[in-house]
Amino acid sequence: MLLVFVFTPTGCFDNTQPYSIWKCENAIGIDCGSSYRNGRLGCLRLDDMKEFYSEPEESVSLKWLAYMMGFKPGDFE
Image 1: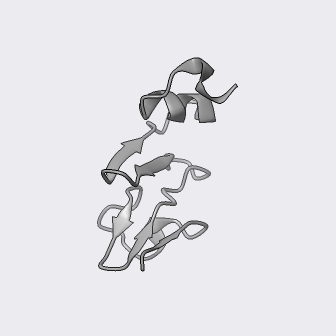
Image 2: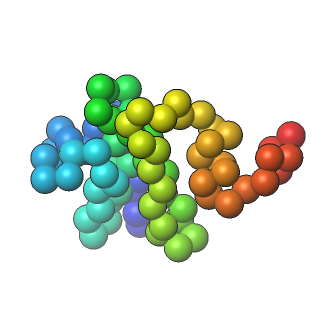
Image 3: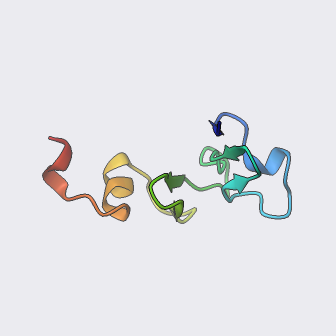
């Protein structure tokens, strides 16, 4: 079993890479602190475990995230 969790920014328990997706044997933390000053939005595509990130200064939206993952604009309409 694999636990994927949010609502605890990864910087709270791993300050070596505070705004990055954190992984261990059976858990993955994907909260990269997007609500914090230098935080960013992190997304993990579970099919191949590829990580996607916004830049801190970018305006993050679900459309941006879908685009970064390879979806087309009309895929969710």
